[in-house]
Length: 93
Image 1: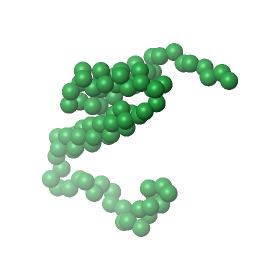
Image 2: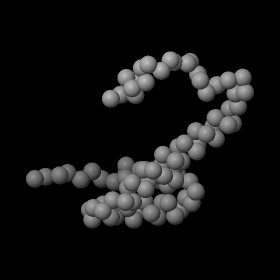
Image 3: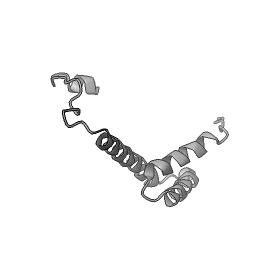
């Protein structure tokens, strides 16, 4: 079920997070914390994997995390950038 259908009955407010006390710095801080939380969730999920074929990627990700303590978004970005530059392997049967 899509989020649109799930919350269809909830009345829409144009910008419910903006009020008379709008503070751009606070919104940026909230966005960064949200991004960090999401990146950490992705990292945790990858590192919990058990596939032997993915061990090299997990080891690289652990090194990225060690290079960026407290900045999981930077660690994940580094890992994704590295993976983007890898040659594509063809899967032949």
